[in-house]
Length: 331
Image (cartoon, rainbow, N blue to C red):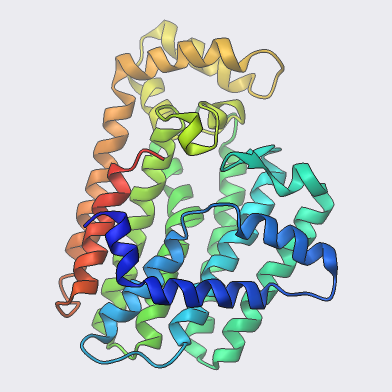
């Protein structure tokens, strides 16, 4: 199944989630609504809500779902993601996202941070309204782990000694954990048993890791016009991702010294463009892109395998297809 076919399977649900998002973003403070609306309507993939919806249907199959609960869950998962984007762009000093100006570039860092806090707290209002203790436990733990992941990534920035293990811990915390939480919450709300809840959580964790690994590939291999980001943005911010880590591990002495110099000097003016060409060459000669794609494929296969305890249905098939789509994408 292609991504368009997967989305079509839950098209009515996705429309309902958009309604939830717009309703719950409303605030009596105009700037809050303006900033939040800017990022939520910024052309994102809505991948996390899609995982929630598909997981809920797969966990419930062949039973019908309780009215509206999965829509609320998809909404607050997207809100958590939105809040992290608002904060990330401030931390990373980003000026562009998805081909347009970031909220912090348009409205300032202060507004972006504070509206990010609003979106976080609105997400927890939505969780509390469901009245399901297990959902609150999953999400409270997940958001705490995500925050730790952000700090770990900050600690790894401009550190050429960052290992693959440290990098993988960051993506497990920063990206994969929200995928995991979304799939698990969906199973809980669908009334699934513990085995199916655990299976979908595992699926989400591996899918999230695969997605981030490919994201890190695309930072060095993508069409900026399609992706809405320039090549080498992670490098410009001093982020140590797997293609770069692999090149540092496998490169010649000259390549390793060059990469170390570039990483340590990240953020300096007039360095990024000429350095990117040399970094790309080193990544190519060491097979960094291929190695990272292989790791992503491993995670994708693990995600599909994790679905075994989930009852057969077209929604389970769609989840399996989504794990394949995640590693085949070009943006």
